[in-house]
Image 1 (cartoon, rainbow, N blue to C red):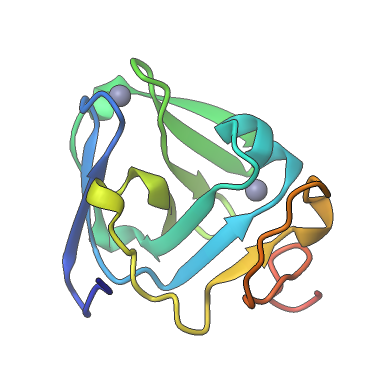
Image 2 (image 1 turned 90 degrees about the horizontal axis):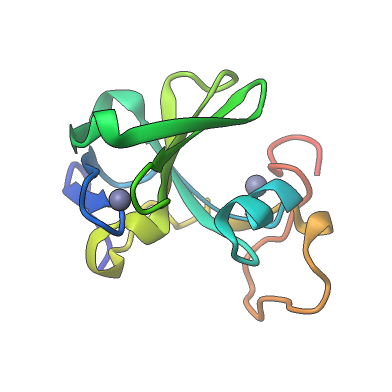
Amino acid sequence: MTASPNTPISGGCLCGAVRFEMTGPAHDVYHCHCSICRKLQGALYPTYGVVARAGFRVLKGADNLRTFDSSSEVHRHFCMTCGSHVFEDTDYEPASVWFSVGTLDDGADPGGRDGTERHIFWESRTGWYEPADNLPKVNEFGDDNA
Ligand SMILES: [Zn+2]
Ligand SMILES: [Zn+2]
């Protein structure tokens, strides 16, 4: 089910210590193939949604989050109990939050995929598994320079 405008969407980490809610839909949805996300998530590629920071609320467990800076500009927040990577902040897009779409409850659709959903950092993919979809596949973020 696609989120309609201003729909609250809830999620949390695996163990339940960290819970969040956001006002959907996401304004961008990315499947990231960069080598950092691959190691960090232990998956071939994670999916992120981007929402306005003003609409993202940690409801519970903020003190159970730990932060790993995967670069000087990217701050990844994890549940310290179960290890779920729940969301991240970036210095270059401070008004937004990137959340891990897989942490939404019941596999919820983050919404906002029309025209934004794409594979990013495509040149960094593993090479042995390629998603068989028709989504755009771009290098870096695909905004200006892909
Ligand atoms: Zn947890
Ligand atoms: Zn990445």
